[in-house]
Image (tube, helix red, strand yellow):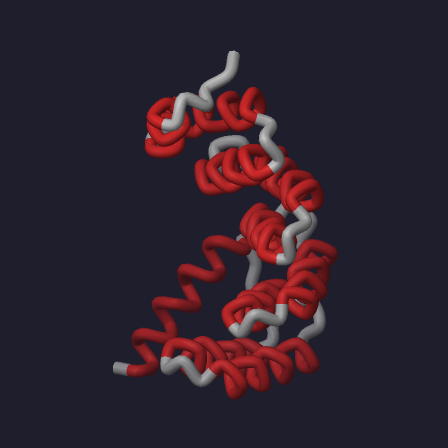
Length: 174
């Protein structure tokens, strides 16, 4: 059962990344990391992801997953470094741009977060989560005109909750 869950999680991760390793050992090690992370054993997960990266330095999903785990632990600087590596390996990895933006946001660097959300949107123009994240970042900077534009785009794509929130707070700007 555990292996089935890990395989399913790996398939989801590969779908997001669009790539996988040609190295079976790196994949197995990565899957152990997914398993450890699913059991909330984050330190062990990081160790497995690190081993997978050492086996296959082009396994961008391992960099992404290690960064995601570091972010869960509140180590945003290490998360940013790993997301950056994932992006270097796979420059069109929209989820990595979005997650790196989240890490910058959590550090209070909203301008850098916006830059990363913008890259995520450039790579994946229908990525609702990136529009929503950029909406929130613009709002934090009191740029309600840009926040409104992004909230409207997210609404066009199917998620209108932030547009409704801006309207409720009377922050919609044209």
